[in-house]
Length: 437
Ligand code: NAD
Image 1 (spheres, protein in one colour):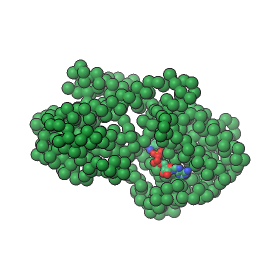
Image 2 (image 1 turned 30 degrees about the vertical axis):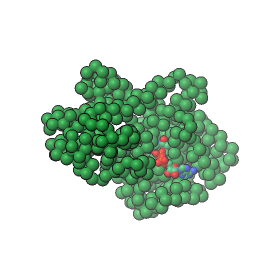
Image 3 (image 1 turned 90 degrees about the horizontal axis):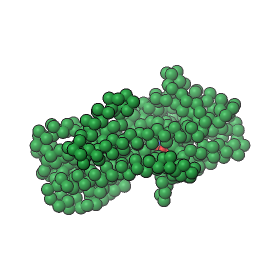
Image 4 (image 1 turned 90 degrees about the vertical axis):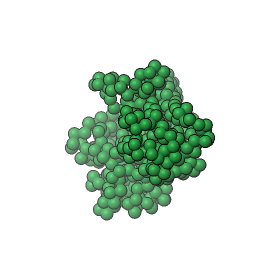
């Protein structure tokens, strides 16, 4: 099929490359000319495992190209909208200006039977509004909403082989046409019997934010238990294991730590609350404000634990921060707890040296005041405390005996509860986890 993907960021660039890998003829379009120049050369603009290989082979096959000109979307039958929906500067609501602009710029190039497919995460009600905009254009094109559930770090695999497909489509013939086109786009996933939910716009939009709200709630739930464990002497990691054996609860997403971040969960739960308030049902998801608050308190907890562990005034201490991205296998530092902890410690006067396998460049753009090092040993040398805030394998696999020879004081704050506490203690370290004695 001929496909256009409008917006080539974390979601769109992967989607465009994956669609070409599946055999479609794809044009990726973005307003950022720097991004398009790099993508055209097969160079991803962000770190995502496996993306470079897929990009290069798709470009070489002639099935993938990139452009800054929306006119190049003309001729495609399916147009994916993958632009950003960040939090507004002055409120918790989603900023829809990019989605609106993308659809408006696309409308003149739509032809009879074309399908515009929303992938961006949007507040419920957006699709119906955009559908009216498309209908009013008189092009004969229609709209579907097809939320994306990819996980950064596994984005290529998740796009090529999703765990489920959700189509929000209009009623009647238009809906059948949209479903048929999407089934053709996702023919390989359909053949693999991937669960498919065909529904209306509102449900499709809500599925995405509900999924993220649930995941955020699960993480903040266990972090709330960590807070209670901290004042009662219990161990939240054992508690998580024990409740996780119950299939109805499950162990995944029950790791207490510094909390969630990234370009999705935090802004999505805030936008959900804002939208529910607009709809007069703020109380239904008011608990998400508490989920957000618990999450942000964990960052503060890591900072407080670190400061109180120092045997000296914070402004005379060197703190080694291991990790900057919001999670391993990504260079994404949007709303990253790790970067936030580094910034807060620096703000308190500590000499902070931070390292990350992939996220230094992005962190430096946002916080040039921090000191960064690509050398792990240099980061650790002379530290009065080590703070692990992103569980990259290279940090999890550190040898406590060797690292003890580099630091000034062997104190480690394990912000992800990911290290073997007994091994670190045996090597002479003061080991401090979250929600653990
Ligand atoms: P991003 O900021 O990385 O990418 C957005 C891209 O859209 C940018 O490259 C920007 O230049 C481009 N853009 C903005 N306006 C445009 C326009 N008018 N025409 C063409 N391009 C335009 O954001 P992202 O992380 O890729 O997220 C995009 C959407 O997908 C968001 O709604 C997000 O919530 C959702 N989403 C993201 C993920 C993820 O893991 N990143 C997962 C699921 C859903």
